[in-house]
Image 1 (cartoon, rainbow over the protein chains, first blue to last red):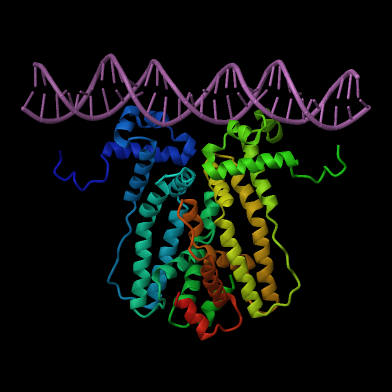
Image 2: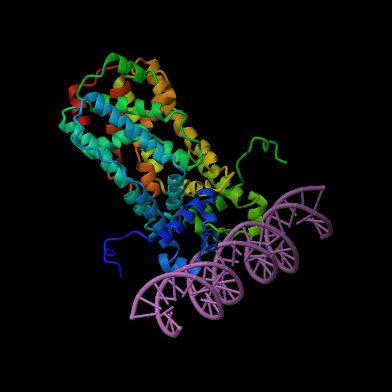
Length: 219
Length: 219
DNA sequence: CAAGAACCGTACCGTACGGTACGCAAAGGA
DNA sequence: TCCTTTGCGTACCGTACGGTACGGTTCTTG
């Protein structure tokens, strides 16, 4: 036994390679393309190994979610002194990143998979996906807006509520539409800009300039 | 041939009863519970009739969506003179109705079904669900905010954009969370109130009272 | 009344999946 | 060098699904 095996919820490189193939199959062909036989063939491993490593199919799906989440690490950049323009830039960057993540092939495929499974009673995939997939991005946004509040640039009582407002302004029904097969936005940056303008109008402490308000109302 | 059969995209009462059973099976047990054999047993019909009426499984699913959409009719109440309070009431009613619809058993089940199918290439269920399921509610909201604009109570250039803002403020990520299996909100009315307050702050022409703004920022 | 259509219940077929078992090769430790 | 572990490839099993075929029954229609 390796000395550092205790704190490893991760997998071996070989298992990661298999999970990578599993994600590829899922993205390319949907849930029906992700069969144990197909994965064993694509990853050059045996079905027996799959069941030994992941238990059963649900365990495999959970491992795929954990693996994908382990690949995403948000860069924490604390310290930097906040002005209203810096805050706006950070919020817009967050919005663009959020839209890019939600529109990603793997994200859409995993969300479709978990949603499809969530009809079964007692499937923990949905909870798992929300926890693993959203925790990083939620933390980043919450830290940002709480920092903005401490700097006197934002005003709200409930940070959760304010964050949900920001999320709704950025995403609207776009996520569900993409899950249903519609193409994404033509210009994520423009949507990010509009959403942040609206958020600052609602929760910013400094009065929005007439220009900014006009630009927002103008589209 | 009946004289009025030309404009009938609907189904016979018998077929509607079968589709009702199909929706029941889907809601109770998810997609895996909706099998042709199971439906034939539950609806006391033969599999042969199912294939005769709906073609194949995808046709059955499409018929279920069309049938469910045919049950929902939004009440058009034009004319009524708009004041800011009446507009606010109508917007809040719309928000509550939207949240109630999205949280409905059948809506969630159909959305899960269409999202699960949307991974397959060339599945038209997603587009169908968006068109049939959202058209009514979209029309109602668009008519309302355009009426508000004509009455001088709202200000925006692009009605689509304003509507998406309203939608995002009302729903945020709640729809996806519910699709993933999370329970809905405890208080839809409160969420509706908050969303409409924010929307009027962004797009209303009358200044929000300090009370309203405080209540909004306060949660 | 008779002919035909619609339809129910059941049986049937091919397929493909999840999961298990086995034989054999390669790697690693003593 | 030998032995144990790991894992690959394949074959296998039970099951359940989508879709089809058929005999019998009810209802319509001329």
